[in-house]
Image 1: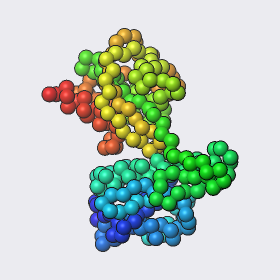
Image 2 (image 1 turned 90 degrees about the vertical axis):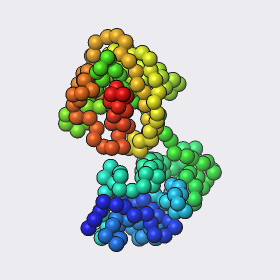
Image 3 (image 1 turned 90 degrees about the horizontal axis):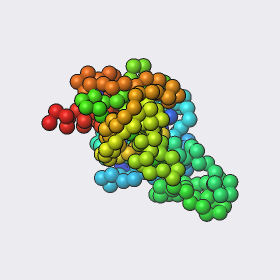
Image 4 (image 1 turned 120 degrees about the vertical axis):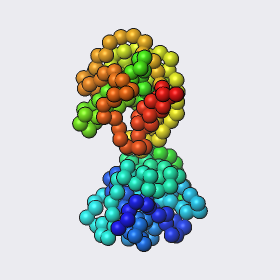
Length: 267
């Protein structure tokens, strides 16, 4: 089977059906293809599909199943595995879909009255059948920053990273906090240094923690690296010409920022 490409649905409605962080695909004419909504319904998801959006006239929905025992004749692929094998506009819908699935799994009941909620057809929201409270998915704002010191970049590793992998400093924005202030705070808390000249370079949705990441580049100001031994287990300055293992996932925002810095340094 040639699975180097993923076709769009042949009908006007598809369903991104998930099992945890994996998406279920079918084989069609020697290529993998997303399930139609009718095919997804055969997994017993009932009315648990939520509307995600439309691309090229095709409506996309999302749903999930708790166990993969029922999967027969279909294939499981991690989202990172299908990046580059599907149109980018559709791929970002899969990220949006996983964000919604994560949210729905934590939002079974109304936060106002405690009654069961229901998914609204063709809407990206859920509504309480008792009090009418309408709820939309939450987004956790977070920052990620590349700190530069002359021709070196600050990289750190967390205990939950894969072995020997290093990345940029990141963290969640706290309530009542400016985005820029959170950049300074996270760097200070995790590695003990002061930074300056903080510049915003872009944003990136990240469904694995229902986050919207704000990316920055900053310059080292003062202090010595002192790791917090809580979130960070190692950190150091690395030459851009001799980096340790950094995220290999092509959609990784950290990777994109690092590649961007290398590019502008060479120009």
